[in-house]
Image (cartoon, rainbow, N blue to C red; front, top):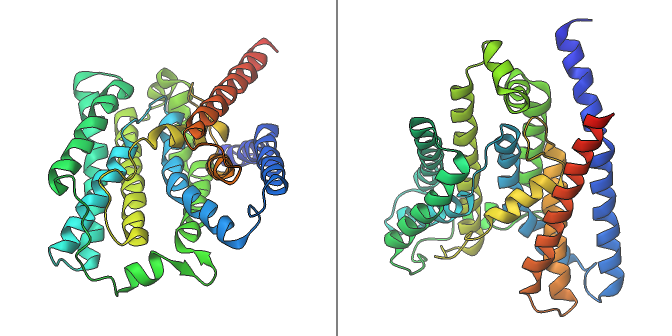
Length: 326
């Protein structure tokens, strides 16, 4: 059996981990409990609302799996989401074609990711510190660009708004995009050399360096991907809202990180789950929606989400400690 076959088999074992099955079961139980506790939770419109909310968060959480797997953290994703959305709407307002506006927003996201990792590498500062600062930088630049006002004076008749921003058939286009990206990143993370090396770097950076992996290049690639996914989410929200909102995406970074952690991605690096991140995003969206359906004040959603994050981190820590003691 060659090394390639061994890698594929070990990936299959990771896919079937009890931790992922447990998260999926938790989502099912949570959904059923809230569904039978409220009048409209199972309704079509509410399901669409949950899927759409989970989609914006879930797209970013796919990239966060890669970031966390390398022992990095990106706290600026919400601000990149905001900045890219505002920039895209700015270009549309100034009569640029939709495809240029979209590519411009994506390019901005990639540049933001390069800015984060470039500073980290240049000054050898942990990314959690760099992105804590760039969070405010990108948010501020977005506000400067829009002067605190929404952009909405542009044509909304094209495919970008009538299909991408709405539905394909009966389902939100953003949810379909999330599913496609989940499949793509599932393959990349679990079945390619790129994914294997990302996990190897997070598991043991020194050993990865000794085997000839260019850690710096892989960190650059991952942060470029993270920036692009955060920008994509912001652009999709512009398509949905048919305008930019100066506050959109702000504060979502913790939910994105939480979705990845809840889904089984370790803060210690070296392991993660793309499918788990999708489930984690759905759990957070269900919790937020359920709180509204139950008539609980919305500010409790942050409290509940915080406890979910604590529980997920605690379970991850206990799981890792049990593994090291056996």
